[in-house]
Image (tube, helix red, strand yellow):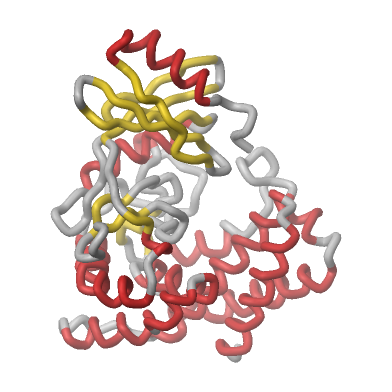
Length: 317
């Protein structure tokens, strides 16, 4: 979706106009569905400029700086603005390392203590605001204030939202539409186990958004907070367990068991662990069925459907 937005030459021109000849070594870092990133050097500093059409994502990154802890490194956002009509930019500190999902099994095992500390730190951060959408200005948001309500409402196809029209596309594949219907029914049956609590959630930790030290001893940066909300901290655990089959090294770690042992060792009592985890795994599957239908990524759509069926079979509701 970002292919037509800004290329390397356009990024270099923007930086030269803004900072003069001292901005150099511009190189593309990569592009996602909502933004495109380039590295550059300015006054002996390594920085990143991103371009996108959704300024709220960049604003969340800047607000998320308040979450930074030694165990939870968050890049500093230095500048946000509009460069062309409808095209926005964010300039931030650059961090280096290996992406979390690129670790091998040995690397995952080495990283686990630091990752658990980061998740604990995230759980302990007081989220701003009072509802699920912690970043909404002055508390105004279309999102339900209740976490269980949001889990259901977020699966509706609402016209005019960033991702809309996906339900009609999903219906073009009846067997996958059936998975969605069954999954939504099962999710509703599990809602009673889900507490209405508020912890900061990143909700995108396995999408090249976490940089890890080369020796996998620590986290170097947690990037891109555009999907962040406030809800049940176990959702972050479900993110790891749902996507584990896509990452063999993570699957071999048995993260669900690791986190249960960690909570037991630290004295944290987690009620209805299995039901909450199943509910959030279902939500992740259903949300990504919608997203894959929206982007018309057929292979991903079928893979997510198969994984969602596995969760349904295990949930037994």
